[in-house]
Image (tube, rainbow, N blue to C red; front, side, top):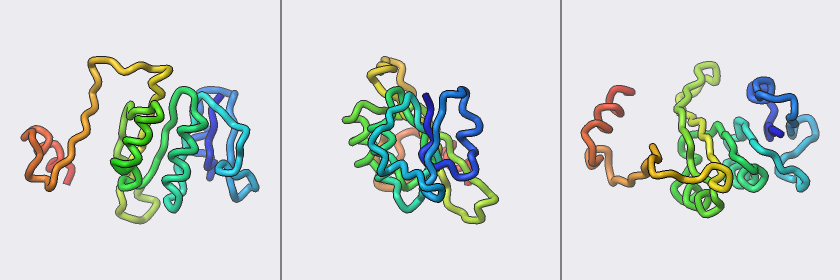
Amino acid sequence: MWCDPCLGKGAFYDNFPTEEKTWFEIDKGEDFLTDNNGEWDWCVTNIPFSQPKEFIFKMANCSRKGFGILCLANSMTATRLNKLEQMGFIIDSVTCVYVKEWGFGYRTDFYVFRNLGYFPRNDEEAFETIIVDKLSSLPDQGIKEEISKTK
């Protein structure tokens, strides 16, 4: 079972790979944040930019296998990532997304989190978290080259 917590125009919901799906949309009287009955295999949505924390943790609490979330790049803070890992969720992938029709220059990221209870951690994890004071202090020249290509 799949859930889209913020249906909007159905961009995610209409592309779910199953007919076993449901949606919420506050503008249609269905509020995901106040629903206490739902548990789904996957929750995937574009969250309201004004409520990242509320949606991130509600989606984690309602998702058995994992969740996907499109949010402003600065919505996924180190504190939130640490709390999600304590809840059993780790990042499976991150895709940087720029949507020109939205008419603003903020980068959005699409995160896929997986539940370690369903998808155990392995020794070949492809993700690493690094904390640096400034870009020039990145430890790997290859990372710096990749970042500079995107400017």
